[in-house]
Length: 170
Image 1 (spheres, rainbow, N blue to C red):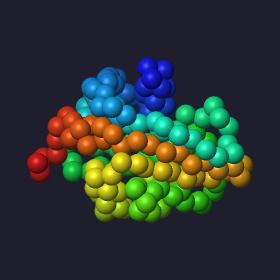
Image 2: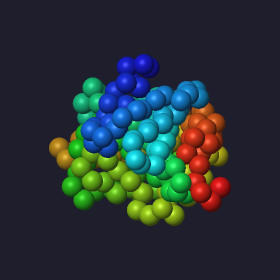
Image 3: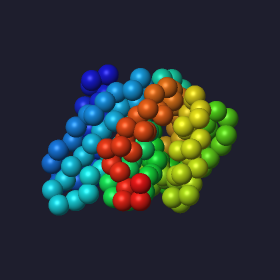
Image 4: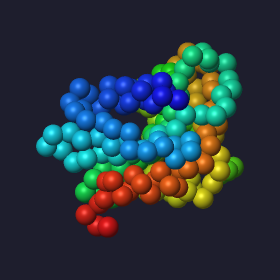
């Protein structure tokens, strides 16, 4: 687990760029980990992350997929993003299923996001009252994956993330 957290921190740091100065693990709530990022002169960012409990498909077994929910201090903006461990098929969508309810996310290279902030909000609200998240993605090389995430601890991790990165409206 510690290796996965380090790996996730490293990937997220690369994704944000080299300006990240301090990233800390705030807490672990069962299957979800809370991170806090402080950058000089910028608003704090917080995110919660998890790795899948089950992985199926015909893609490389060495991949390290994860799901993030990110929140920005001072704003009421939260976004979900999904990394399946490979470059997504060009102009494709991935499918997520939250206790059987389906959503589609758009892809750009190695990350998938919700289309709008309203979609982010709807997906997060569904995650808060569910038990299982499944993600189906297709790679640029034609392989696919279906990853299953436990939502155990999601609600507590989400609340902690909101406490760490409060918006000015709360």
